[in-house]
Image 1 (cartoon, rainbow, N blue to C red):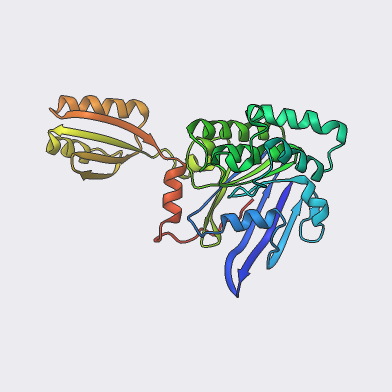
Image 2 (cartoon, rainbow, N blue to C red):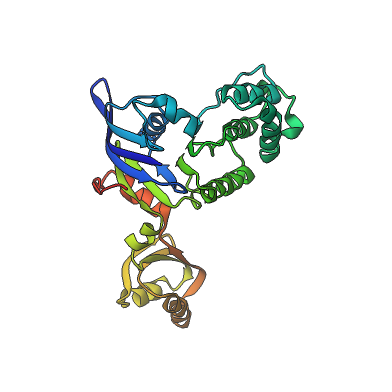
Length: 315
């Protein structure tokens, strides 16, 4: 559905996006991450055909997205970072405007509008003016508008921040359902919350390049069977340090204000046994937690100033 090759974008001869390559098929959901200024929004806007790249190619649904813009745009549903609406229109009028703009058949419009109002829980507010909506309600309205023409590709630029925890959970469920429906989703966000769980791919931008691009399952493979164990000790710190230092399955050990952080290759059974060993060694443990490496760890690792870009093939 989306095929990007050697994509570059510069402003005033300053490179912003550099040699991006990736491919997404129907049902793929890409979590696009990166520090502020890394180029997430710019990449979304280029895919949405709102900005032309400096060089490279983009194919969307079999069309050249640079030359065949009129053929590509009906395939795309774009939810921008900030809501751009018509403040004096009611929700009903707003959706009627876009139903006409999307050229929905007149006989179909009323039913389609009712469907998206129900889907986004906006039906009771249909006569409320856009200017009086909360940020979360405006975001729901933008999603409702996007559903009207049933696009094959969803481009979501930081849609999470205006939403409360319930809204974020619902957004995650929506992304999952879009994938089941065979839609292709690109989600630009820095919220490493449950909303990224339904994504099957992740791309992390750093200074305009992909510092990491791959499938979500690649993250656990990247760390092998390593994990962290956090141990809070109220007494017996020296004994705990001696026990841990003697273990061959402890990779590293860090102690800060009564908290021991262990990087380890222990199995779950061995981790559970470690707690017993500490207690038998007269160590008073107030908290003991095994933590698997995940997306947040990967994000911090590859965006660290000390980490160079991997330069891996994306796709």
